[in-house]
Amino acid sequence: MLFLRTAAIVAAALPAAFSLPAQAAYKIPFAFNKFLALDTCSNPARFEVQNFTIWTPAAGNNASTVIDFGYLDKGTNLQTACHFNATSQNTMPDGYTPRFACENSIAEFIWQNETQKLTMIEAACPDDTGEDRFEASGSAVPTLGCTATTCGYTYGDGNFCRANVTAIQGQFFSLQPRPGTETE
Image (cartoon, rainbow, N blue to C red; front, side, top):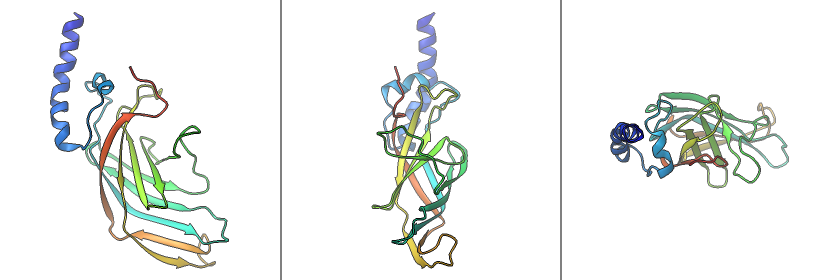
């Protein structure tokens, strides 16, 4: 009986396993194989960042950086807005790179100001407990056009930048367990 169930899971996973390399730029980790047949699992491949903007304060302005953009993954049918400001909460425990949830927390992001790189993280096997959760990650580097802002601007003196295109295409390149979770 166990053999038949295992064979059924493997057979159900084969189409997804063989179609993945054409869609995504990552290998499926061995620990992820047991999740492939579950209805709650997806294999994110590509994403789109829409209308990316960032405002950074000038020297002497104590305001927080402000980031806004839309996120779209057509393959998993996920569309959400993403924001960062003074009230944004880091979703990771101490010792990990800070990341911030989008309005739909299945998607999270990391902004690296020094390299102007946006890393997107999307849950591939979300569940209610957060256990056995895998996530795909990939990056996009928006080309920005910037203008200086003055004290009359909403956030004061600083620099407002907007991506030169309204839609930035990105590809996931990693599929790994969420940091801090255990997988068998």
